[in-house]
Length: 308
Image (cartoon, rainbow, N blue to C red; front, side, top):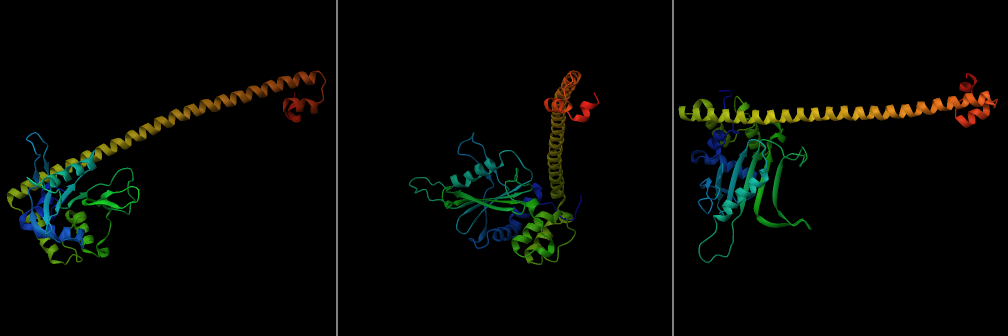
């Protein structure tokens, strides 16, 4: 296996670091850094496999699912590659912690907050956000006056490829956590900027050499799946680029051919008019008309007429 530390972008790596009871302090630290000033996250994990209300309903399996001291729910997902309808998937997943709050009998429909955190190993397509904007918080908003219409449903997306801070630029705990997520599998030792106790725990838990034989096999399989996924995405991207280039070249050839035809037609018309003027000038000159008069009616120069 390459690297000293596990890759948090793999299913095994992310759940090993953030989805186990033994490492709940790592998840608590990350979420408290993300939601600084919010209700403190507790160590309560919830069942990450969510079932629909009926046996035929589709289920959802979260990477990590927990709640805080106020009873608010937090879904944390590592999204390894862009996929169709990613936003729809986020909305669908958020419905499960909403519906599970329903109470039998009399109930006034009061809900606790639900937060979906998406750690994205890609950027939103079509330049939806500026390159220097990687942290997005989305709520239901009134489009007329821009106020938050409902503050109990929140989606937070982190476009990780846009995080480019170096070690000496890390200031907040949030910066440090993003740096760890972005670079962990490429590091060979704990950076000097990450001296907090929680990061000592993280690097200890992330050492590949300390995995049990069973966990090591699971991790190797998870890495293979991750690499295959990245290769599929990269191949599709390259094919798309090649296809786009080929279409561009084909379009360019077609446009060039049409432009050549148009230019040829224009040059042909111009040359035809010139030849007709030359022929008329010969007749006028043969009839003894003055050169100045011939030039006036044929738009030829006096030098051209003189040489006829």
